[in-house]
Length: 126
Image (cartoon, rainbow, N blue to C red; front, top):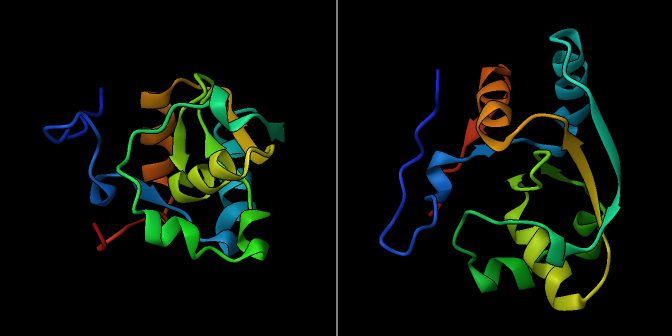
């Protein structure tokens, strides 16, 4: 099954259509994905090498505390952002390497897997 994401006039995906993973659920998410046979890697990546799909609210990105910037951005193997667009944007502005967890699946498959995780939510904020 292919997941079709709605796109706005500017080609971005609305925030409400993308998955949101709370930091406290990352370990359970990775255990869940591992039980499905999904592999992943983690480290630091240059944010200019990553594709974003959401509009960025600059005020949100600029208000992110430094402690939150240490949380990894969730990527597909493409690499495209699945969760963490505002953290990505802030790292991009700061011109510094960004922590990541990358699923070894393409963007569409990664989204389907993330949405199948019971603790995945959707943002109500645009």
